[in-house]
Amino acid sequence: MRTLMTTVAAGAASLALVACGGGGGDSGGPAPGPAPMPTPQTAVPDSAITSSDAFVGYLNTRPTGDETGDALTLPAAEPFTSETEEPYAI
Image (cartoon, rainbow, N blue to C red; front, top):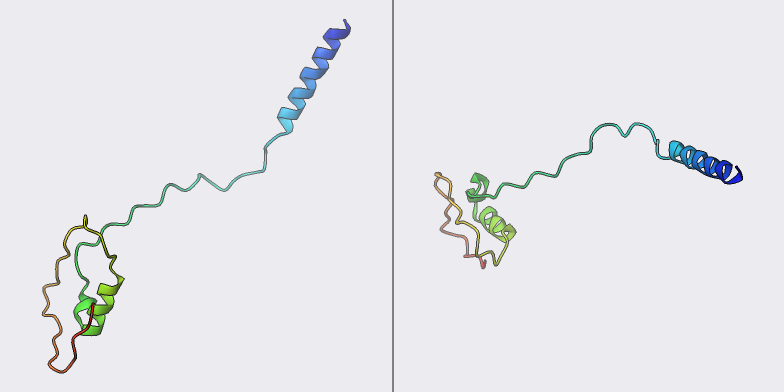
């Protein structure tokens, strides 16, 4: 009889501990999903051909050593040209 009471008491204590666990309240909704993958850039932006400085600045932001990427297309607008500016080292 004593082992039965001990077993019942242990079971009741276990249930009491399980019932008290967790319960931090509402988390505010479902967890956010994974971040969307950025779409690869396939064209030079129009703002990059407005001046030589803008184009060189754009080229300096492009990653180097990427031999698996696609070639970029140029905008249909006429690129900026200057007869007085010195050439830039890229």
